[in-house]
Length: 228
Figure 1 (spheres, rainbow, N blue to C red):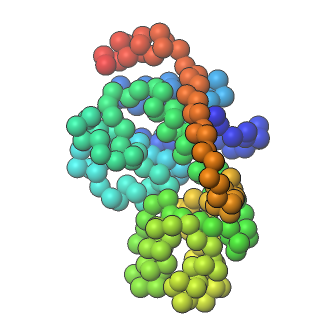
Figure 2 (figure 1 turned 180 degrees about the horizontal axis):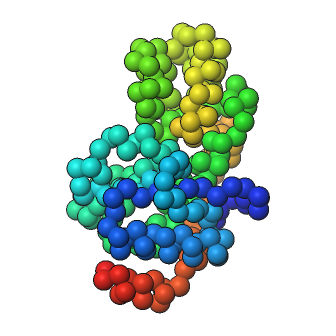
């Protein structure tokens, strides 16, 4: 289930990079369906800036790390046999999995878009490695980024571990947060860490399958017309 998003919240921008025309058309159609049903708030962007980018992972160009600097999140389409990472999506595009990915990215981007002033006490972890331009080939910045890639840390904790001034750590966290490179620690998960242990068996939470906001027949007709 997606979080409640105010009606005036700007839509996020999804771009594609050198995808076949048929897949691009399918992505555009799915985005319109999701938007009309309220499943998620994304629009197709034909030019930068992008919040997320969908690239062809089966080509050398689509595998280039330079694409990682074009958007906060990059998803690559690939064949099933090559799918070894959560950053890959199997072909053909399945509307349910594509929707789940968009919803997950949307939650992360909305969460990390909070005002940087809240970063002093909050705990964060890297979503992805920062671009070289942000690290400035600085050993201290690289160490801070490495620590944040391993677990959730606040500016104070990061300063204690790295032995760097807290102000410098806070500034680095704010820069990463402004670039939407951080994931904030979930408050519910954080509170569960301080609950006393119990010998009683814990009930396993029941997972609920995400709702589907698309018409299967319509998608199948689209694929037939696009020669999928």
